[in-house]
Image 1: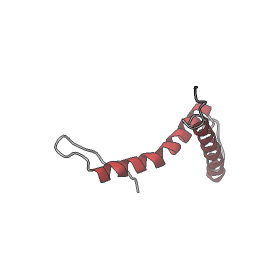
Image 2: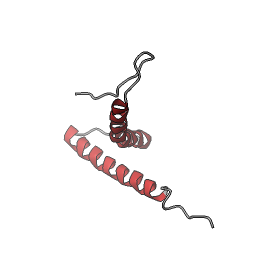
Image 3: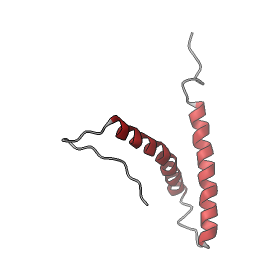
Length: 86
């Protein structure tokens, strides 16, 4: 099953509930898209010739590491953690 966002048209604007549904979908999709972007930048998959089960484990491990890195950077750059000027 593929879940896509809801699309507004000129005649039919999105309701606040549908906008919220799009936000929830985006929040869940963003880390996955970031993970795939990292994998493409690292170019790990172009040289990989192995059993698909091993590839799945490798991808999961890489996505976990990427998620940890993204969370670390978000923690560093949140407005609460920035030094406040006097």
